[in-house]
Image 1 (cartoon, rainbow, N blue to C red):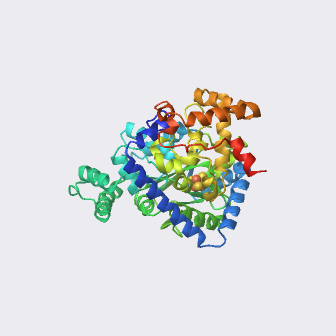
Image 2 (image 1 turned 90 degrees about the vertical axis):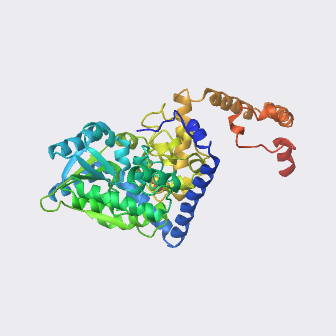
Image 3 (image 1 turned 45 degrees about the vertical axis):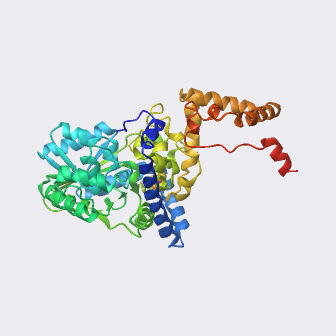
Length: 456
Ligand code: SF4
């Protein structure tokens, strides 16, 4: 599933039409980033934990087949039905067939980016099955008929006033009410009914443990537990990269995830599932959907380490100022920009360029993904294999030629300096999109002159 814009610049431009929204979006996410910093600085072994997590992931990805089969065997022994889906269509068909077998009409779903990736909701709706997203942020975007704009904070782009209006329209709250506690209580009451009416619960999976055949889902709202414990059928959907070998590894990942995501020491609910309750059914769908292909790409396989904490989004200056809906892929931000080109290089060709390559994403990543290096590598592939932004391609070629020829470089520097001192309209005009929000300092000397002066 993708968003409505044809590329990232178009989406960013739309988001930037409202500077006030850009400003508070930026501040709200930076606040989360700061909370993350405080939480991580609180444990001296943070870097050690990151290293251990990265090594567990590297080992697991190298033996993915072994651990997935071990998980299947253990889960089946526990009484869980295990299904394999090679792509989104197969995933959706499997979920639908389970629901149809049980005559399910009402489903409660907890947050799962995988089901977003597979566009499960519209598929089930087409077959007359009602799906209610029960995570508060997800319910807000569902009522607004939008997609999540962030993987942990799906409605972060919405102001409380907008949520108030939405709830007034759909949940009958008082007109003009914006008090978060009042609105949350209204959502709670509304969702309580949905939980009681549900014939099945669908959840995501944060970690699946090969040695035990169990899995863990982390939430702050307890909606996973409400859904899975009340409904007679529980379907858990997981990407195959969510597997970890041992129960003892959970301690590493749970500590990293909560701190990186929201700055909490631990997620409010870390719900462990091992087997269905008496008289109930539990299914797990293991989904590939391009993951083994990504695994086969040496430069990009590490992207499968991702535990979906969202930290790379919160810290990214581009994400914070362009909003999650500006990305053409379900998972926005830096991690989405390295996962998506492998799925459709042409369609997502603008995403690896939605970065300053400052490296902050890689610095905060709890599983040590070299995100900015991968972004840079995708850029090279995109420039070679697609016709993305011919003007940029041409200007980069010309810059390469100029920088490879000292005489030419000196001459262009001099001409450029004179040009930059010329009439403003020659530089800051609609043709120069780079200059819309940026201003170059007036040059006082060429780089060559500066270099001679400072390095003699
Ligand atoms: S890439 Fe790293 S920082 Fe970004 S969501 Fe995944 S685990 Fe978190």
